Length: 348
Image (cartoon, rainbow, N blue to C red):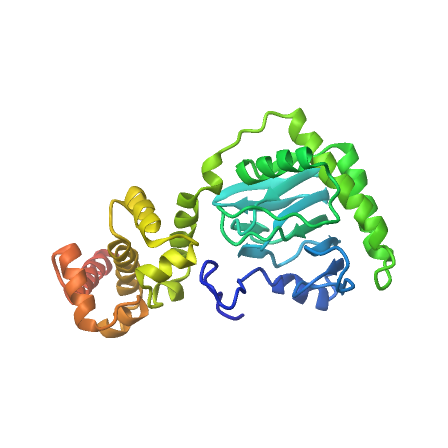
């Protein structure tokens, strides 16, 4: 699999999203039946170019036996709804674990980290919709597609809930179940866009039913989820989650630009979150990685470890490491190795 691109790092306005490769492989082995209509890189039949703009993928899979795969931690560029019609399946979002049961509906925000399978997928039928609302950072305004016909008041209410709701799993109504089954039938019988009109009607119905579901329940809203501070938090979480991202040459101006913020505002949020300057916190993250690599890569050179963590030279790496911990990287590794040798000698 290709290495992921940092989500908040601009590469000609393209961003790394899930590629569903384990699912594609399972379909290729005929272990899973998949039906989907898509725009872009997702697996399934292509929608006509101008049909249902914003819909990245809508469809379902059906697994008749327990699988040996799952969809690992990933992110999608749009709001994602999944609905489990039958079976059970592990689901996790931002570190919280769930076991979905029939009629459970999940809602994940654009670029929210989640996983399907624990770690594998069981038997069952799973429906999904990923709709791109033009968001690359949490503090950006959502842009709904023109085919969504909810009133301005209803759409504003739905947007407010979806942007600020931290509850990812809901028990769906019978009406939502029937609506998604109708969408599945339209997907299965579509031939080169023949069911686009039906899908437009059913997708509008789905979002209206979703709003009704939220209205009936007490939805706790957290406005910090769409704040500039949240964007900065996710930027550094992305760096820490992917070691190759930490190794990139990050200037403060580039970090701020990647978050869509001015330098002054970016520095303000970093100081509030970490009590450090951006460069100092970046080095803090790199040093956390370095201590782990020094433990795990007992035969790697100190220079290679430092470069892999994003330090420009072994001398700079040693200087920053000593300033943080009071001893050199080599002394740290020697201490770790001696401790291991002592533990091994104590084994019967």
